[in-house]
Image (cartoon, rainbow, N blue to C red; front, side, top):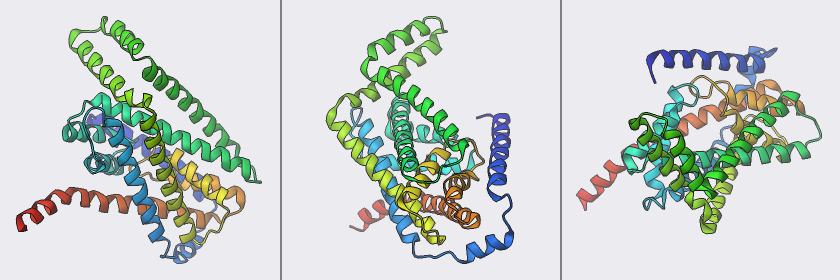
Length: 328
């Protein structure tokens, strides 16, 4: 990313985050915020850490399963690229950290970029489907209607997911048609660019081949359920830490909206996105806005903190293994 594009992205992300926070803190007093932060209970942090660990393991296992046809891959081998994406998203705007995730995977695992992109595309679509399913379930159960903007956002994301599913299904079931289409486009491009396009499209089609395997689908779906349960546990932990007692449907709604909020443009570190998601979920059921803001900030802070600790562990693990082998 060029310096100019980085500056523009940072500016746009900062403006978006400022807008989210303006919506959330409107009418909120500093005294109320201070009291809400002072009332935080520390014990639910243990539940958050357990949920975070479930999410990290499930995400790594899913990518490892997707890359298995190319090379036998363990979840531990996926962790460096996974954490590189997390850390880059903390310092880069507009979810640009995913590029770092691809680069580290290509260099560390030796897989084509197209295969990693296709694996991540499946991952994102499935995550959105789970979030939208949670949103629909919560909306059907909750007696209080949510704000209209919530449904507009859900509809827009649902349409995007539908398009993504259609493209993935086409690439999975008709790889020859995809290759023929890419070849027709490549014939009109310069030779060097055409070669790259053909190579990456072939890698994408190869990466999607696992979706035709029922055993893979069962394993993948199982880890998706583990990830979703871990995320719901993490969200519930932040609500309880902030003293918010709500029904399970509201917890699921918070979990779904906080997942969908990650797709919003924002400043580095997800500034304002979790706060906006919690505001949309909790305001209709009468939760104190200050407590909701604190819960969302806990989710943001704990996510960043646990990711930093995990990344440090992943970076130091090879040195620890070398040290243990030398002592042996």
